[in-house]
Image: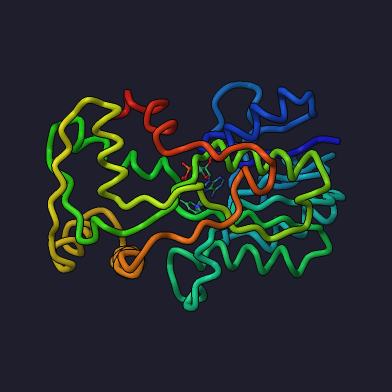
Length: 271
Ligand SMILES: NC(=O)c1ccc[n+]([C@@H]2O[C@H](COP(=O)([O-])OP(=O)(O)OC[C@H]3O[C@@H](n4cnc5c(N)ncnc54)[C@H](OP(=O)(O)O)[C@@H]3O)[C@@H](O)[C@H]2O)c1
């Protein structure tokens, strides 16, 4: 039976496609902006694109998009979908998840899926290692990285680890139907992540501590104010001590979690 994979251009979506193809599973890759004949158009906020994408599909790997989720569930139920693996977020577990802009889109989608008659697996990763790409331009220009909370602790997860876990949830029974919080295996501060990037790229990466207000102003140039507020509050809280390690590829699949160093080596050209 066909497995629909949404977010074909996304970092995790690409990995899920590769793994299921290698396992010989019939897949249908879907993207909001498809390129190539083997990817179909699916815009998760445009219900008119759902029926063709879901026809004959048994399982779905889903990116969370709240606009359109109720219609997506209806069409998926009608198509006979039996299992959806959602790329959710650990932020849904926060105390203010309903109002937190980092969490609310995933939470709305989780709730709509939980109310359906489809078995759902919620993968709730913490921060991706690939978020470090946000420093790419500044590092490439040999400019300092200015942070209000350089000692915030995070256990970054390699997107390929999430893809491994998602592929396992779609092909086996052990993870099916579970809600699983995911991290990498090691807590690192932003300073430590930048030191690793410096080692791997051979570039000097100076770190400058700035005030909360300065960071708010800088980040506000490219992010909505509520998202900036939420991120800064998260990093302030994360400065208190090491990040909690949740489930990893080691605990779930018995294979070591990929390290941040590995992610940095694989992506060194981006810096
Ligand atoms: N980055 C993190 O630290 C982190 C942590 C926890 C959870 N997450 C969750 O993981 C997801 C991806 O994270 P990312 O920031 O790293 O991005 P990403 O891997 O670059 O993936 C984003 C992809 O989402 C798909 N998408 C978005 N809106 C869509 C829509 N309306 N219709 C169809 N597809 C849509 C797009 O795929 P196509 O263009 O191929 O359609 C896009 O490439 C987000 O939902 C985020 O909440 C991220």
